[in-house]
Each structure stands twice: as structure tokens, then as C-alpha cells.
Length: 384
Image (tube, rainbow, N blue to C red):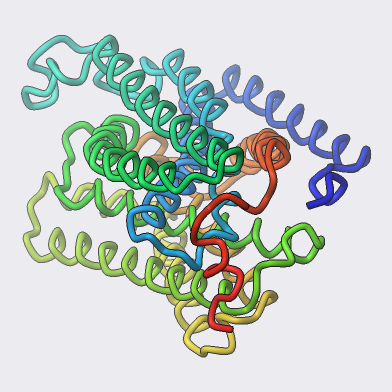
């Protein structure tokens, strides 16, 4: 790996700085003119980029637990994504300043919103947020430390430790992320609930994490920093991406059909808000962007081995994931504002300007290939 391959040019740094400043100004103007819309945009982008980092951590844990030897050459890419977790946790912490604006339950006492008042209270909300973020940061630090230690002594004991940590993390993640998705997204509509919502959010997180890993891997490979990655590695990542976006679509249609068929007023209100008042276009675009186009594009074997095709599909899915999160929140908090405006775009770009240098700094912090991993030889000669 060469340092210049991961370094941003002066011009690129200026552009990112300008985008970051534009995002801050847009948020400030939004707070002055439409606080609910500003905090909604902030929640969507803060949650989205946090889940990209968390998706890298989940992918890393799954690969460790499955003992997927082929994946060693992309292991550090997933670790690099987790480098944003501390910053992502900080940005979610800022959200606590807007709780009373964004969540209708924040100013109500116990017993409000169908008996959920004891759970939906600002203090308990902040405590649960701190607990979830703290656990994710802890597991990410422990997994990165075990990986770094293996670079030094090349001992296989660190692989066993990583497997054990991964098992503990995935069990913790299942509960903590379910709680976080209920708190941060679903409670925007406190009267509505869905037993499939947490799994639906997880499927989107994994799809976006895979897409981000693919984009970074391909860009690093093209820059010459990761020549060890071959078409077979890309093919496996492409298959995983194909499977996850299809799993997301399965959950999307399952939730929709179950609620549509039951036709319970408290449940159908969620979809009525997203299929009326101008929101319906984005509602169906969401399914097209996050499943139909990727599904058709990645069906051929050749497509899953093509850098260009994978880069296009992964990039589309990253945009689609943001749209999916936006549709989970915005129609409830601002039903009169249908669509994506300048504020939402600038907020997204502002967070992008924060995400990119943080991840690149994490990638530069250690060699891009885990030389001490006992599965490295298998990965280097994957299908060869």
C-alpha cells in the first residue's frame, strides 16, 4: 500500500471542506426557518452514515464467525469503515438537542401514546442511546485491537479471539440495533409499530455496508493500493450484495402486504402517509432503486465480476439506502413537504465530507493487508 493512494489532494480537501461548511450553514438556516425539517434531515444523514460504519462492523463479524478465508484481503476495508463509529456516535449524540422538536412524545408524561410514556422519555432515550453506541464502540475497538496484534506476532490465537468477539457482538447487535431502530426511527410515529421493522432496518444496514465495502475495495484496487483483490473476491462480494438487496426487498414487501391485508387503522396510517400528498413517487422509486435495478443488473455472472458494473450498482444502493431511511422518517414529521429539497441534499453532502476523510484516515492507520492472518494464503489464491 502506498500512502498517496489513500491521500486526498489539496483540491479534494478544499471541496470536502466547502461541502462540510455548506452542510453546517444549511442546518443552521433550517433551524431558523423550519426546525422540524432541519432535525429530520440531520437524523436521516447522521443515522445513515453511522449505519455505514456499523455495517462494516457487522460484515467483519460475520466473516470472522463464518471463518471466510477468502475475505482476508478485504478485511481491512471493513475495519476502515468502522473507523467512523466514534464520529458517528458523536453526531448521534448531537441529536439529543433536537429530541423535543423531532419526537412528539418528548414533552408528554407517563401514559402518553398508548402507555409508552414510561419508555418514551428523553432521559431514558438518552440512556439507551449511550448504551447502544458504547457497546458498538467497545466491540469495534476490541476487534481492531485483535487484528493489529496479529500483525505483530502472527499468532492464530487472535483469530480465535476475533471469532469469540464476533459472536458476542452479533448477539449484542441484534438486541441493541433493534432497540436503536425503534427509538431513533420508529418512535417518530409513536402510535405505529411493526414487528418486522428491526429486521428490515438490519437488512438495509447490511446492504449499505456491503455496498460501501465494495466501493472502497474497487477504488483501492484501481488506485493500486489493493492489487491482491481479484475477480473472484469481487464476485463473492457481488453475490452477497445481490442476496442482501433481495432479502431487503422480501422484508419490504412482507411488511407492506401484511399491513395492507390486515387493514388495521393504526397500522395502515404509516403507508397512507407515504403514498399520499406527493410522497407516492419516492415510495415506489425506493423499491426500484434498492431492489429492481440492482437485481436485474447483478443477475449475470459476468456483472458480478465487473468492477464497473459493481461500482455502479453499489453506488446506486448507497443512494437508495439514504432514500429508504429518509422515507422511514420524513413523511411522518413533515407530511406537507413531499420530496427531497436543497436542505436534505446539502446535509447529506456535509456528512459525506465528514465521512470520507475519517474513513481514509482509519485505512491509512495500518497495512491494507492483514499479513498475520492464518487464512491469508487461502485468500490470496482464491479460486486460483
